[in-house]
Image (cartoon, rainbow, N blue to C red; front, side, top):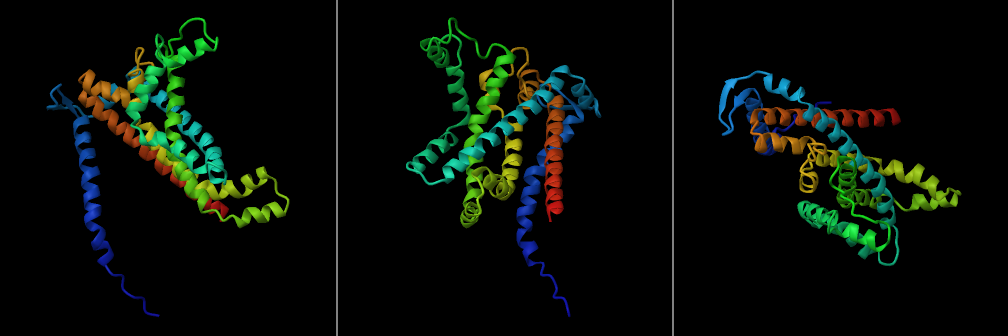
Length: 294
């Protein structure tokens, strides 16, 4: 049987989009790479070729090392907490009950508010002198003196992770609700007739069918949370003494507070490489798991 020739027309039609995407993403990467390999003054002018000296100085910086490991804790904590809370919320919102539409609006409403504005509200709420949280705890008799929630990293960083979880839930719930809406209801009826409990139906039916959407939510949330700037910057600016800095906030300080644009460019490439490596590794693990299941 003669095989028909493949038409080049579809590829020609998407070629402009591919070229535009390569330009939008490729040129900044090339420019940042060039900057990271040179000595750059405070005015952004490239001076002498430095080779890998900027990367060596960055990797030897103890503040960068702390921010790197703190970024991992921040990302795992926020994404993990978001997924664990979003799954039961999505399951509840997927059921039929009185006020279902209002409940969905309440859950999705924080998504419509600027993340910076949300962080500003939380900074006011957590203020140690006149914050709403301390005032409420005083009224309930749970505090006898003010608590400075953002004065130490031991308290401030877990609080920032908790806020990161809260602001990430609406998007994740939306993704999971899309997955739940595609699950046919008759399989649950058949499982109930066979005597399966609610936990057995969730473990054997809902979770496997929801797994592709959970994977999407994990990847998108990690990319978003890894680069999330407003929460930590508005609440603590990475202080005290850089003890709540993550990579993106320390990158901002390097470039615009300390004037080390060359090292900031090197850090940008490190962050890009870390995210790219994770995305490829996670996609490979997911595809490998699917092949083993098949």
